[in-house]
Amino acid sequence: MLEFHALHKAFGERKVLRGLTFGVRPGELFGFCGANGAGKTTAMRIALGVLQADSGEVRLQGRPVDAASRARFGYMPEERGLYAKMTPRDQLVHFAVLSGVERSVARRRAEEWMERLGVVAAPKDALEKLSLGNQQKVQLIASLIHDPDVLVLDEPFSGLDPVAVDAMADALTDFSRRGVPVVFSSHQLDLVERLCDRVGIVRDGALVAEGTVEELRSGADRGPLEVELSGAEDDWSRALEGVDGVEVLGKQGRTVLLRVADGVPAARILEVAGAAGEVERFGRRRPALADIFRESVGG
Ligand SMILES: Nc1ncnc2c1ncn2[C@@H]1O[C@H](COP(=O)(O)OP(=O)(O)OP(=O)(O)O)[C@@H](O)[C@H]1O
Image (cartoon, rainbow, N blue to C red; front, side):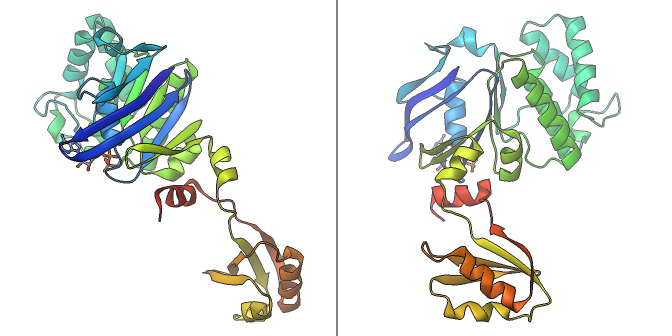
């Protein structure tokens, strides 16, 4: 278990972390979400010892992380840190050897990972000649080529095309299946929702929501009702004006979204809709992680 425990951190007067606490279990993919500036990168830097917490600590298997345990971390920093003039292969081998991997094993792993993630690079190309997405793939490989026991990744998916996202997601899932705790920050909430076992949402340096997406959903406001009608007049929803406590939120194609106050029977809405046209679909929209996020971070 990787635990972020009661972390506090201020830069001058600005309190960036205020008791941030959460845990990532072995074999779990944990999505670390929060608005810009909420403190995600700061927390990850503390985990890696790049920054020191004012108080609180990061623990691995119950013990504070130290240099020895950090050597078994894989870290993808926000400020990508590769050598621009070196070829991807050379630097991957270099990083792996620095982490104690035997050179021939490092060479093999570098080839395998570059192939698996589809890094497009001519053998002699320096890193700076690669597209940004390909550089990012190399950065991810640098974080996992030593086969780490823990993965901490700062926005690993930003700027990747969907095929690269899938390849990277697949690699992270493999690590988690082998029992590695994997935590990554991301603003791509659809991806977090699809991929993560659990999610934490940080606001102003403290966790305001944590759980599986299903758990977060059950605590969220109930989603709007969606009514799809065919054969109805365009302005059929006016017929709802007589139904107290119904607010028309908008229209998407033939679907009208309604916010319905507690106590208004859905059957009454269905009746009005049924009188206006043929009801193709009627139900409550499940809140997406993005809706839960907006609710948690306050709009
Ligand atoms: N070295 C520093 N000195 C002063 N302020 C800092 C420093 N590092 C971070 N901050 C401030 O701490 C706050 C949190 O930053 P952090 O990078 O941890 O947020 P984040 O959640 O990762 O944001 P984003 O999603 O935009 O990457 C920001 O207001 C930032 O300006």
